[in-house]
Amino acid sequence: MSVIQWKGTYRLFAAIRPPRDAIDHLTDYLTDLHVAVPWSRCLRYDLWHVTVAYLGETETDRVGRIGEAMRSAVEHTSLLRLALSGGGRWGRGRYNIVYTGLSGEVDRLVGLAMRTRVAFDEVGQDYDRKQYRPHLTLAPASARLGNAESAEDLFTLRRYQGPEWTVSSVGLYNSVVHPELRYDLIDSVELG
Image (tube, rainbow, N blue to C red; front, side, top):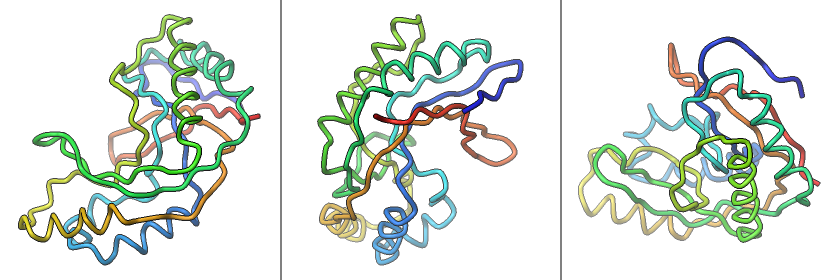
């Protein structure tokens, strides 16, 4: 894939995008939750992803080097089988999120994330060094719900089990905030 380039900075992250059938299955499941209506403005299915590494603000002239580092970490990894499953809530205040977790070859995904981070270290690229917790962020947990409704939703979400799917690539994305949030694919590396 060719790399898009322009001057300035990107807000980069490496991520896996679940296929449409996995997203549709989860979307159907979420419609019964109390938060479905309050979340309707922030549930952007086109933005859902599983982050492999978050790089943050990065000079555009580093994109080629970052893409090569990601390639060295990813291209010798065989295809992974994952499913969206379970879920919960973590964080505090405005950084409080509701997420769904993963099942399947999660240990291999963690290994892929760790190899990607090492590759970024080797080219001097900074990234978020928090402990890696594979998940898909559904929405901020700031919906105004009572404790009973919120607890019921979390109980329901924890029982979720989506269909299994194959991870075939890792993308490098630029998070564009204005005028409307979108994630532009900058580079992509096929597994295996």
